[in-house]
Length: 423
View 1 (tube, rainbow, N blue to C red):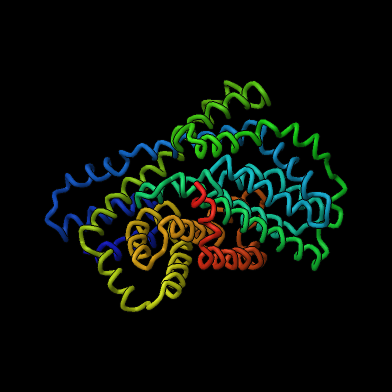
View 2: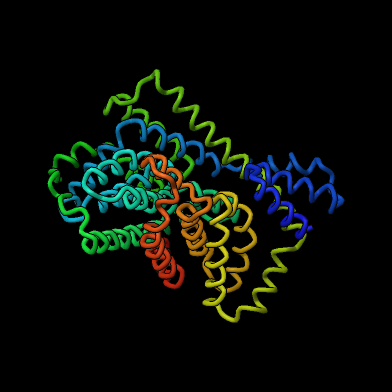
């Protein structure tokens, strides 16, 4: 049955069937022709996959991100970041990275981060002499921080599918997120100095006190979310609901850039995005059930133990596998299908499941900036108004930087775990 599932999935992906539909059809095909299970299993397993309290955080964080994107938060965060790093050569490129890092702690989505921040900073960088492909590439690669720095929708999905603590995963994402952001800033500083870009970025430097005052309410949201979770005030799911209420209050009554007439469209977008993700989660839960029933995790575990003599070589294989998978498979689907299979094998090699989750998410996040299906590339190209192919050459620098950061995160687990061990 495993071979039939794999072949049918590949064929459906090749002919561009939507991810959730492809997973569901492949599962039904496997049940019908290669098992004795009744088709009643299909709705049962889809329902049980979605019947999880932590998953309630997904629609709430998506809605909170949409509310903050439309509520005037993006521009204020850009000004705040510009006041910190914008006064040097390459300051606008560095501002893009810092803003994405902060916005990531609000939206939990890389695509939302790309549109919200890119619509402001890509035109600004182009105006200051950056080549358009370079500006779009910096934005796309910075936006992947949206799924690495908590709160993160992929982290919630990994936690649910592997029965790992959401709070520990959130805490573990802080170190790697800061590391990747720091290395990207160093990369763009070197890039700008070698190529001579961004020499006039400091001309529009802002007062730190003034920009901090204006961005105060936006900056308080990640503090409330993460502080509430780790202070034991509320669970990650309850934190998501608090984020929605806070985003509504700030957008309507503080910044006054949200209107009651505009709320239905924001809610509609959140519902559509949530529906797509939940359909993937449901069908992937069905597929994971069939894979577990077939004994594939045990087979892979035995194969890994026979072919990889050390944790080091196993993790190298996992990185290569996930990098390839991330190029072709949507992040949530890849986590739901591969997480329950690979996590037990990693534990057998002595890898902490939280650390493994971070390695998996960072790896798959790179798929958002790699062709042929890098969603961040397409989002950034749409904002910049250029074909995505023009970004491929400039993509090599940030992609290489993230790969180096991934290797550090993989083989220095303390980067992910030092905060979780202090909880």
